[in-house]
Figure: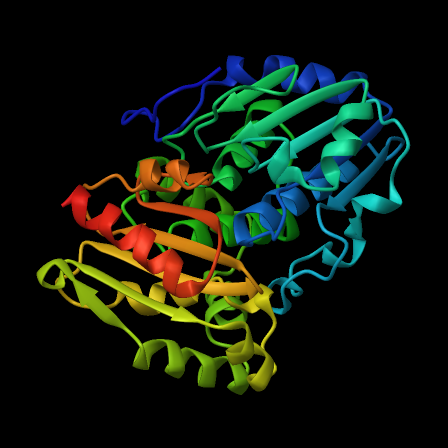
Length: 337
């Protein structure tokens, strides 16, 4: 099911859209919640916000918050309440009554958690990404929602479950990061309405901003300066791009999980409409991030490259070198203009 943002209510969904989701949650004795691989602020904030809410509302149920990868969460998100409860899904191969996927449009994006989803008795998907096909028994997918955290808030609100400061902090982190601190085009009325409720419930935007955006390691800032020095433009300055090699990260002691914000360095160039950042993640493997600063939809480019995302923010993985990736993607971006 899907919905569009209502300008009158400032909501992305209606309460009746959540009835089946609430029924599944209430009927389940064991529940697993997971976001996508390489989790960002929205995936982690949505998982933890929902996890804390369900633990509070249903203390007799077994509820586990899973990581799709067998690794640590990004350092900047370790302040999130409940983050110490996250465990890799490879440690949870039992069959749950219910598996809840948040912020993941496909089973593939769930990585190790996909196996947990397949073995569960029931599956619920809450997401704001477009999807080629659905994999859950019940899906609430609203592509117009600024963040999946907005949808999780609306679920909690529709169910009448109370918001605590910890739940609100997790969800506001998801909203803030997926809207780029409310700078991106997706910062719509429902995002601001949601943020207002979360702040009223005890979330502190200044604390979230401090932890996520103003506590970078010096090593990361040095890498950022390298990426900035490599920025170049095409198409008369309308396309900007930059890149980083695996050795750039290794020599400066920066982990891949810290690199999500590097595309925003490229996004700062005045006069550009489309932005590309390429990062070599392994020999012969390049991770690409795309951003659109205006009305041009870049999701189609990501899909053609085997990735996906939104009109203004998308990503893909490319098999080859950074140079080969640039030679493949830049003409596609120029063609859009």
